Image (cartoon, rainbow, N blue to C red; front, side):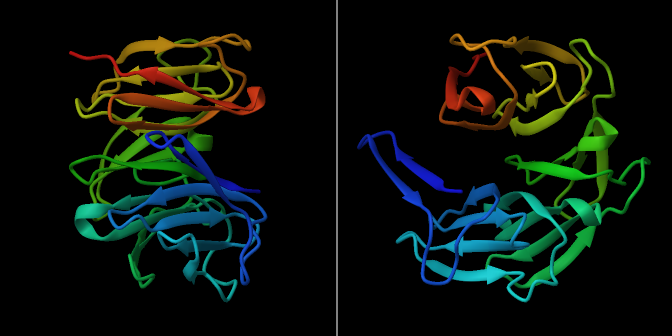
Length: 241
């Protein structure tokens, strides 16, 4: 029930636990904008809480309790000043400006293109394309920033190239798509046409092994994977072309 902040240069750690107005109960998604504001979705509180660089609460989205059913994955599109929130039980993605004003939503419940079955993790690439983990449809769907469907990656299966229990998504500067699969204890790497390029990891507790990998992020040539049941974050070097 904490958000940890690590400064890899200063080698310092802080945590966000509680404030005068908010006690986090089930923080799920986290995103940071260009001004170092921190956006945290709490699936039990049914809110997105926005902290300033001083780690004090600036405002909340869903403070009245009626905005979301279960907010989970979130992502910021910096060039657009937009926040995208996966509302899992509404089977849609809701979009806000960075002042918390609602703009629009896209998606509905189903299995067709552009429909969702419990969407969760999100990622936005450098072109402002939105990648959505369409969890119970066992696929990643890709949309433009307006919510127009572009393509999909993955389908149900229990071997590399397929998805079984997809979790976190990340995209590198070469357009390669990284998906953490909790059931297979791997991270799979796809091209933008959905073809498997590589995978790494297997079940275990040694270095490079996973026990239910979930969140994933890419930054400055490093891949960060939340290795849930091993209670750690593992860091990998990005493959260069």
